[in-house]
Length: 62
Length: 543
Image (cartoon, rainbow over all chains, first blue to last red; front, side, top):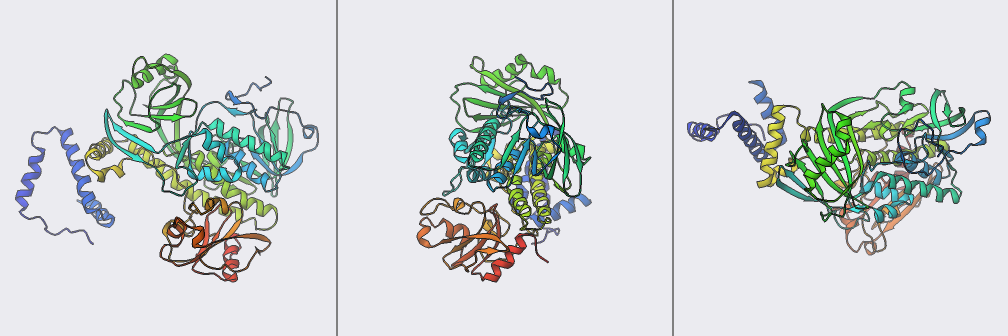
């Protein structure tokens, strides 16, 4: 399985809204903690180490 | 007491008082093997070599075993090795067996784990036992072996002050209460700890990573009703307890308490009894009755020597490698060093294997040290996050672990010591069996309960051919080295543990096992030539 960097989210604007809404009213510290939990939850869902490594590399390049 | 004034520590047991020997007024005598340092690794090495009939002299600058519980967690592999050397039963009898660990974040319990090993192992996953008992049991075994004629000598109060390394020997300058003398060693084994004087005298480097943290140990004696479990707190809720804390039971109603204090501390102040008591009171609750048994502050590094063999000098245990204490990988890995070294050195001394076999000691145990350092460094990074973001992730893991099983394997309060698999190293023969991964070539054999006794007890001390549900070729020696046979049938394996652990889907198998119980090679069935060729690989004679 390869890392999917093509559009894959149904209703991208809706997702983006929900992402921001999750952070609404949080302090910077609370937001950092939420992001960390989210990354860990998503990483576990992906599971595949090659995909995770590719995602880390892709995120590091921007 | 005639303890020399240079003592670095007080004694728990005065087991080998200084006694003048005639050699002190004679020209330097040559010994086949000299061990510097009578700690757990030195004594295990001496006992094993001596029981094989190889003369060995242990030099220790003290007259016995130092005080302080120090290494308290002894792992199954260490107990298996101690069993072969005769000390296992006393360790099990005295030690506290534990299986359950609880992890807290603040006042909240995040989760608990159970190390309960699978069935069919003679030894538990761990026992807790104060290090002085371990050392005493091994010295007692040495005394028993001496009575049976084993050529082991211990000289207490003998401090090595100089080494002159020759091509085929090492000359040692030794200081004693009666003044200096010299001896020569054909082989020198430095088991003299993290601050190894031998290593310093030889000018060898010991590079690695320093962790800027201080840990306070308080051993307290109390008849408390806490369960026999390992309790670990991240960001503990009790006052002034630091970044993490540990509570763990030892024998004699002693509890080990560890507090992580951070880097910039006043050691003397923190060690004052009233300051220690304030922390312990906060943890155990005001009014809990206890006595302070032993306190200490330690720092640690993760590092190893580049090579554990330098000509005729071999380094074992903390002198060769040092890890953080998380995971109990210090003394346990040192005992495995001894186990790896002794059979090789014994064969070299008997002229049955080339000296280069000892390079494999360095290679295999450095590989193991790297694994231990990796695990222990990762645990330390989880315990003591070094940046804001690493702390954010660490706490996110702890927050998630309470509610979600997926996060629990990420919680790292120390990955507990298990023996290393020597994957891909030069002493490995062929893996020609589609068998279980855990007993692959390079792995230490896994114990199994047989109809009568335990498998590892049957594979002790020499090369063994283990044949399961098949005939092994009739071969008793290779190049003068004995091979013993253990043949098992389904009647020996009523619990089907041998089948599960050594056959998998294969109907039958032949394993060749080293004296340290690592698998040399395995086949569905083997010829004499297969065994002979694999033996030569295991003896470093390939090519």
